[in-house]
Image (cartoon, rainbow, N blue to C red; front, side, top):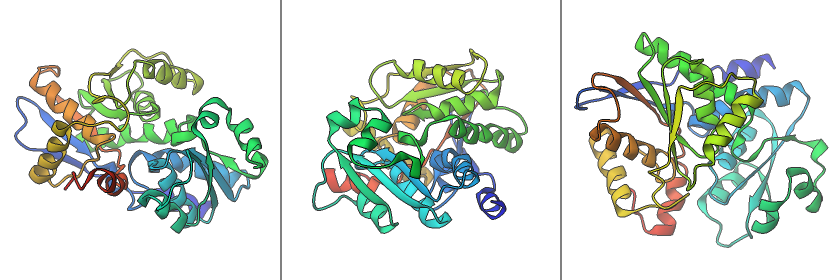
Length: 309
């Protein structure tokens, strides 16, 4: 346990200021640099879950995800690095040739089980595992996306890092939202101070309920200093437009910072658009959290024709 804890105690990720931003200061919290294979919010979400799995005596991790899941990739990499065997339950039928994400996770030693989309969506984790003859008692089970109270605890730590790096809290901390755990962690870390903005990568406004419910489940007060913007999903999860791709490529060319089209590309596009629209107070400091997800770019380019440089 001590060795694992020491290994998980990374230095804070860098805070990089972006130049030439109108009437304000804009920083990127480079969580994509936390670890070469377990980057971004996945590192923070897994940190305390891995410690808990070890404390409880588990040597097997089980989790769920889609065929291009950043979470599956991170769990597979964590299992390889920290000595856990891993099992991934994948939404959908097995397809050959296998995509780069699933090839990578199997290369890390993760066993894969495939479940059709209807059963994946409609069954509880336990009933789903029973249907594919998996004994859940043998595994430390991580939910899809890795989002639970231990994940919230890990994500909350970035607030203290940012505060120390800036010498105070920024006016707003912004993150992309898929399951909502990263935003919940930021809200938890802020404890009512400052503000947090989530940019939903999904259609619909249900994430507000998800985040509020997660905060309540984790024993947090009903803070009012956060919101979710649902205007920048570009058609829904994993959907995109030529404008989004152009933004991602030009942003990397200008700053050297790579973005992905599923999460961070939409976040950064949204924040820059909101800056132009005067959403943020003049003279304020805003931090964008780079949540990683870059492993998915290879698979995206394979599917859509090398759109991202």
